[in-house]
Image (cartoon, rainbow, N blue to C red; front, side):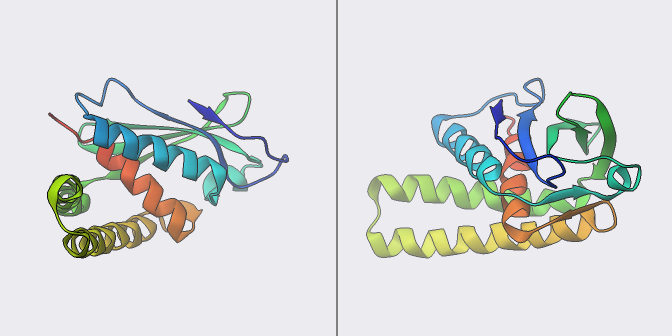
Length: 167
């Protein structure tokens, strides 16, 4: 989907792809969220797959995200598209944050069209709060597997949400 030029050995994502078969439906607002998250993620991120690095892998990395049997599948490859590692992450603890994020985003998109600036700001603050909590949870769930920073985790959570849209 998206590429970024980097020096060899960088522990970062240079290309990210979402499994299009997982995404059943998305509207223009969600598509915009996806585009922004991917753009921002490629521009600046920190991503170090610990087991792959221990085996000598060097970044930058290619990442594909999918949902398989209720779990997040992260396929991590090198720049030559050789698979370095597959990580399956249980999503049960993310169900509530994902539901809350969708609900608050829906409110936010409706507010943008007809609410006052103060109402929009209040909803946006709530949206950021849910997003931040989910990013912390993602960092916790990746502990010992992938080292990442808060901003990267926030953007990855957005993309995990996109994979859960059922229409």
